Length: 530
Image (tube, rainbow, N blue to C red; front, side):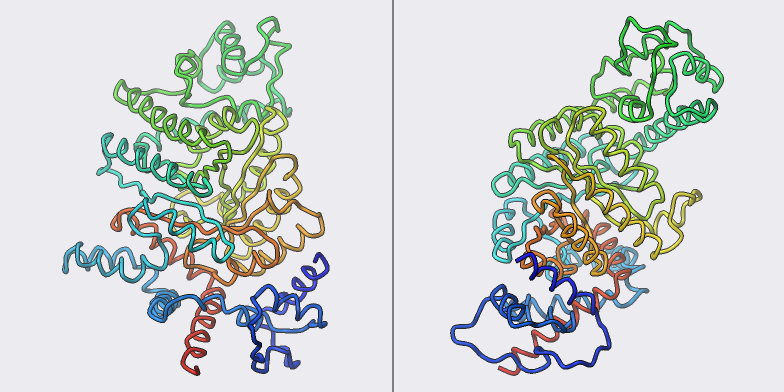
């Protein structure tokens, strides 16, 4: 079987090639009674020595849409075809708001539910999760439930975020009936204005350690150097406060002197935060000097921790639960990573219940995947990491600070490959990896590297968004690779920003759009011929 997979991988390198060599698939497939299933057809062709066929024809032979109704096919074809038009894609959210204003949001939401939402979402009801799971299971594909909630600054309230938290809890409980995979977005349950403030404090904490270590040209910093550095950079403190900080926050031995204490970067990254889930640590004098919250913000901080505690406690009921924490915009992401690592230190001791997400359109992705390995070794935890190219590139490119963005789509693709290889190399023991990827070439290179390294395919899985790159989702399991579909569920109006980002992401991967459109048209043609 291993040789067969390697042969299939070589075949897929001919993606949209102009090779005119006649292939077995260039002629109509002979009818067989009874008809072989897809897996049997592939194995038969490989056994017969099939070595050259066009990837387009390969996917065509799988007939991945043969179980769709004709009306669903036409709707999917229409939604896919729209992704060809940049103007519509880029202005989709504005068009939604304008049409809702003119025609009324109820009517527009009904239209969306009958069209776009049927393709890219699981609908509005969390109770439908088992049904969605069974539909995907029939194609040997799993699912990740993602209760869709988007940050709406100025409109979100503490009561609403409490409600959203309970919806996330329900999504976890429903998913535990099937495979216990859930995606979570912190900005739906955390005050966005406060997240920005926490994000800024976290960035300052990281920056001050970087300055102190660079000043001494050392990777590690002693307690004495930390004391001198903090005072130098405006955080006035005494040696006694630094000693308390090292013991309470950095978990250093109380018997060590400041000169003897050594602080590594991974310790600083994983143990120094603007907001702690252990409230006693928030009272540390150095932490308080690094931050500055009003009484109202302190209460909101406690609410954030209370909500996340609720979510992760429910998830931990099932030891096989996997919570995929979404990456978000750069003005939130530092805080997201800060609070997530604290929960990982609690819940990822045996298995990676909580996944981090790396966005490879950012230049620091390589550094972050290497940090995953370091924190695993330092704290004896398992790591779970989801790799994506990133859905916020269009938005981030308009922000003032662009220094961390890759210069081009090609640079992002190259970064994804590099990060994926490091992740695969580190995927040992109970560590896990999820490739959120819609690009055929990236997928092919990852498969090749996994085969070369005899990677455990239970630990490294693939995932695509519902309605996108179906040719990858439904063919990867046939080649022995576990695959999941990301399925957003929630109120239509709240899912709109999600759908608009998905549309833009689909436009960026125009070759996938063309492939999917081709396969849909081919399926309809085959039905007409009959």
